[in-house]
Image (cartoon, rainbow, N blue to C red; front, top):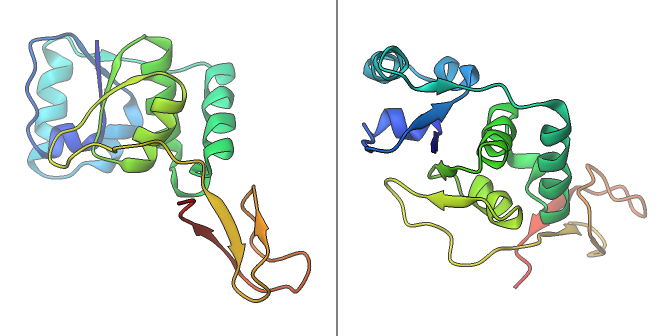
Amino acid sequence: MHVLDSSAFIHDYHTTAQTATIPLVREELEGESVYRYDAMEGSGMHIHIPNGDTIETVRRAARESGDLEVLSDTDVRLVATAFELDGHLVTDDYAMQNVAEKLNVDVEFIAREGIEEQFDWRFQCQGCGREFDESKERCPICGSDVERKNPT
């Protein structure tokens, strides 16, 4: 089962495997991409709603990897769907790929190359330079902005 992100419809992705997606993906599409979604739904694409426990599992994994801040609700629900259906997540989104790999979900990319390695992001205060494991809007020490930092 291939679980399709919006990029699959935008780039006119084709597969002979069974496909699935979530209703929120259609809301991200416009123009011809909407017609592709509707056509695939009409020809048997499975529309899935992941359960709350799985969504929370994905959020936890994304929080641990440092990707939660950049994932939309649609992204989280797509990873949850691929996890529940034991499917291949089809996406070009690097943060989604990172979280999917953390959960041992197979990923297939479309227009871009996939990620080469999984990251557990760190966060650094732009004022005092302190590092944190979790994202914070402001540094609890000096009050400056905290930004995601490449861990390598």
